[in-house]
Length: 579
Image (cartoon, rainbow, N blue to C red; front, side, top):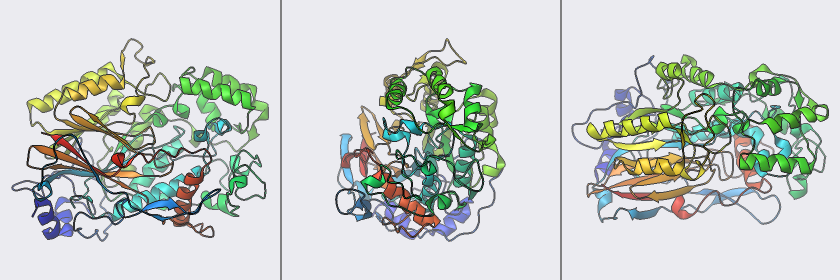
């Protein structure tokens, strides 16, 4: 019998978690499944001790492999055809073995030991839908400018956290999950308020997903404009013409306080373009963005020709500083709606992002800073390395280009740091390396100069692939940004891109690294949905009911892409590597 299975069936999980100082989280794998290994917490550097966790009943140790609570058991799927479609329980996604980078030897499931077991969140896009900095008026040009589910993003993310808290371990190995990594776009508008919502959701607490007027919603969904779904109104808007329901009380429910239990596991942050750039694409630091975001004028509609022009400029990166965009807002100021101003909507700076992560109020189950330390604050940098387990090193990169535009790159200083980190690992313990970033190799083609380092060279995704491939210890590059599941074999490592949690099918991914003890490693990836039921009840506007509705609305969003789930080879997989 495999070491994984022996350990999973004999290890008392509660005893193990108590011994390692965490409830619901095991930190430091390669320890519970092999001889003479000591538990070690995934950490960056010493910091204040995490707050004592609230006692909870840990999930039972699973028999493996298991499927319950994952897409190996069931996946939300539409019922009926045409118009607005309800969701229900759909057929599971099977696991596929991919052997482009290693041979699948028989009997490996009886030999393997776990080296790492964790969860990836990506593109949560916690969004203040009432912010004047949003460009919903581009909806006629792009479905991503406004989505009917966006007002429920907080409830949706809390339900995802509830799902992870209920997982008993890695679905393939049963190994205790040791942490959650978010790979960027945790916020949507680069807003201080959204950052507070994100940190509170992850660490636990109450969130009121409202801004401006504390008593009522003020945004495009009570505007009476037919461009947007008006859930509380009899207006025959464009979405209702497609079958969207009228839901009296929806907007009041959407801004009610949500309670997050917080993750039971330690968690880390990787930064994305929506976390760094106003609107996700404009160079930061311009006080104009703060003036718009915190002000009382919100543009909600735009002539079609102008909307098309603005969207083309955004797509092609023709206006990274947002000069044309600023002129548009000034020109249409008189056509803008008057809303309640709110200072909390101001874009946050890199320094404010770091300070918020280092705030002890947001430490939760740890680690303090969630990857960032006082040294990062002093050096104004957002990339770091951290210990995942005895035999695995994690590296988190900052791939946002401070010069503007939503595609990415890395600066020369960061690339040199990455190379040094990989070389030091090779000279020392030779740990396996997992790299995390927001952007994918295909979406790092932006070399706009960094305003703070105008002479520094920027490097593309192709260049980053070359660097990673030159270091055999690198086994995986894990990212998001594209909102699509895609897994690519790069000579000696796998690139794992995961779909977002705002666009359907709204997923996160469990990743397990194992040693097969036959000259190969395997990376298991298993997709999960939130804990909300697949089927909605329109009369249920509770926190759980809204999370279910969040998923169903995302499926029905007009012009939403239908390819984001990827193929079977991009979903639940075993990825083999020669070692």
